[in-house]
Length: 136
Image 1: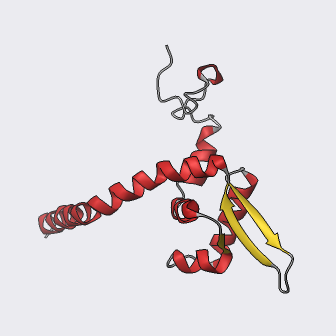
Image 2 (image 1 turned 135 degrees about the vertical axis):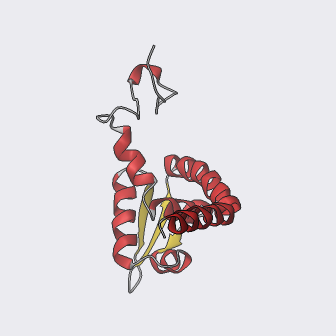
C-alpha cells in the first residue's frame, strides 16, 4: 500500500506520490500554486482575456511575471495563446480544458482564503504580538 496522496488518482498505476521529492507532480504543483499562478488561472476561468486586461485584473503583478507565468502555463498545456492578425496583433489567453479544471479547484482555495484571511491575519498579529511581549 502506497503512503501519501496520489496526484493522479484517475490513474492509480502511475505511482505519482506528491510527498516523494522526485515526483514530477511536484513541478506541476509548484507552477500551479506559485504566488501569481493561482490568481492567473482563476482570472482566466471566465474566458479569454487580453494580456493587458489580465494584468490590470491582477493587482500588483508585473508584466514580466505575468508573461513568464503565461508562457509556463502554455508550455504545460494549461493555457493557450491566440494571436489575432490585426495591427498591432491582438494577443489573448484562455484556459485549456485541463487548465479550466485546475482553475476550478484553485477557485475553491481562493474562496477559502478570502473567507478566512482576516481571522488568520488577526491570529498571526496576536501570536507575534505575544511573542514580542515575551521577549521584552
